[in-house]
Length: 327
Image 1 (cartoon, rainbow, N blue to C red):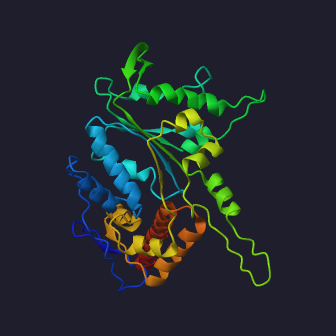
Image 2 (tube, rainbow, N blue to C red):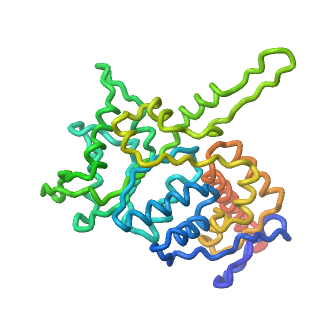
Image 3 (cartoon, rainbow, N blue to C red):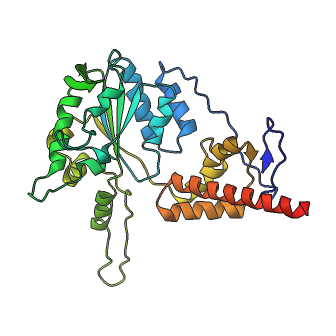
């Protein structure tokens, strides 16, 4: 590790020397949202790959600001940036709210996490928000009670009025008001990993016949269509209201190497900024981190986890070395 220019504490030795990263490009957050191209370029500096998704999100925000709302469904493997993209956009358009769909309950059930409860978190005088429902596949996956009732269908039915742009009653500080949702856009994000695995199995060639070779399709190699999501559990009434379905793509081994070395959104850069130190990784170590991330199936999160562990272990060891030298 080398210290950044604004740090005065002494540096801590870190792995092999001589391998310098090329990822140091400034990520600007002063973005002109009146131009979808500028929004897209901002996202491309923050989100790794996922070109179509970045373009789609740029147009969602551009149109939304002009009163043209949308309802998009995003499918793709874990750790590829489905939710992170909107976390980045929130820095330039604060009126974005995230809802954990995996914990939603049917209205009338115990708890306070119904479909429309997020409305209590908005400024009802400016209801032009973009609502991102994360883990949406967990919400629409069939949930059968002991009486044989599919609760997920009832929960999905509650989305209909919400995304149709009607007035929805909500309690704020024990006072019930109505909020107009017609100016809101909705994004439903989910991995749908189980369905992706089923599709890959159906498309795998088992190699019957003399001399034939087995072809094994990987999950998410084929994009999910709206009918696949309906088959997974999305009710047709809600599916018909989806403006567009977007598929994010899985990363390959070479993608992880490029992310670590060259991309401004590298988790390595974020750890450097957090600690005020420059991390220098050997090519061997980069290959190791990239390989483990690719094999884990956990996406970019696994890269960040590995790098954090490397940093923590090296810092810990450095204090032991200092203590030894002191004696």
